[in-house]
Amino acid sequence: MPESDLSPLHAVLEELASQGRAALLPALHAAQDLYGHIPEPVAFEIGRVLRVPLAEVHGVIDFYALFSREPAAKTVIQVCNDPVCAMAGSEEFLKTLRRQNVTVHQAPCLGLCEHAPAIIVREAQRGHVKPGKITETIGEAPRSLLGGDIALLTRNCGTGRATALLEYEAAGGYLALRKVLTLPPDQVIAEIKASGLVGRGGAAFPTGLKWEGAAKATGERKFVVCNGDEAEPGTFKDRVIMEEDPHGVLEGLIIAAYAIGANKGYLFIRGEYHRAFKTMAVAVAEARAGGHLGASVLGSDFAFDVEVRRGAGAYVCGEETALFEAIEGKRGFPRVKPPFPTTHGLFGMPTVINNVETLRNVPLILTLGTARYRSLGTEKSPGPKLFCVSGDVARPGLYEVPFGVTIRHLLEDLAGGIRKGHRLQAILFGGAAGAFATEKDLDVRLSFEDLRAAGLPLGSGVVMVFDESRDLRDILLRLARFFAHESCGKCYPCQIGTQRQMEILERIAAGGALLSDAACLSDVGWTMTDASLCGLGQTAASAVISALKLWPRLFEGR
Image (cartoon, rainbow, N blue to C red):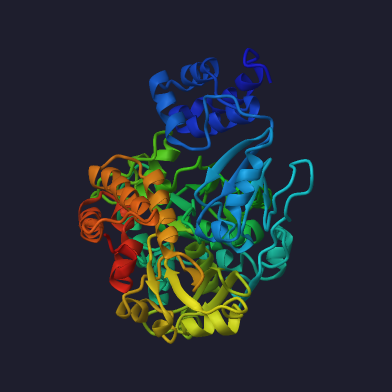
């Protein structure tokens, strides 16, 4: 579309204008879709209508990876180059694409790790891609492998399509919400507290305590937010749930809103997750038409509605306060805490934010009952857990198990063991911000307490497997590049530390390690851990510090 034709943009802005700056990201997404980039006249018009200074509009455009001020080719392809996709051949695919008339964006991770190597072309996900011409069929539409010992969180998944409202209700969906609407909110919170549910996004904060804090807080309005901005290499569980069981997530969010007294919610979904975004938007429309959202939820006096928002390519927005900044139309800079979101969250109001897997647990708890829910897992880690298994295993996929099974059971019995003809070298636990396990750890139980005792983080449930043929220096360098690229730059320990970490690992990977490199990596790593503002910088060196302990020879200099 010609840049001079602003009439389609005006039609979009007319609908968004009443929200002011809070509509900035949706407006920029609309502009990018209309024009293929965001030229100066378009940026100016967006700023004028939404009452945002042009300099700040440009600041937001430049902060997020999915926005561009420069024209791109007709075909834009995002190629995943995280460790798993690189091991599966994404580098060769990148070389092939760069010889063709396309715009190629090298993505740190696309959340399609079980389909490596993966790309997104024309907003369509493709996995197991092979070098070839774009005019040919590239790869396959991903259909996730699901497995495990139980299927509670994933009971509506595995079909390769979204579960519609009528299907969801036929399988018992929204019964938990109907039950909740007959209970006082404090009783709902008491049940969640009694269940022992903790956040499944990595922080593991008790969900019931978070809800209780927001319920007791005072404010003109309260909000609930679903964090669907999963973007850490190796993580894909939330994508699968959103794509195939959207009403399970939505029901959990509505229950959270009822419990704390919120009348507005947001579903914030990773920008690269086009299918999940569209699926959740359809589910919200279905729920609204079916009376599950609106002025009278299921005929009650509880009013609640949801807005679906799309991120724009910034890993840091997985941090809760950075996500709030994005919804408010700003660059995704984390806020200093305290104050905490339960008292001063979105738009400065009391807010509960939970990730996708956490919210999917909520209707399950209220349907099964606390006692039955706690009968799964261990005393200190009750309930089911989703694990994202990728890399050098026979069957990469999403596995649901009760807390307490061993790493060996997950890898050997469920995922089929290490690929044929190879042996285990290492497992990266918890994601890019995780730590390494080796064969000696295979009988450690998958629970918060057992993994903590073994020095391993549960994180978001990432299990990335490497056999003996993989160069761990290259793996560490790719992780370091990820953090250097994704650091928002707000605090110096992370901004500078991630760069220095990457530079040292580049030298080591090239065979030019210095005698001082190991000590420098340790010093930089612990400085980031102790002094960074948010979880990105605080965990950016976790894998490197773990490798320094396990394999000091990897870092030996001349």
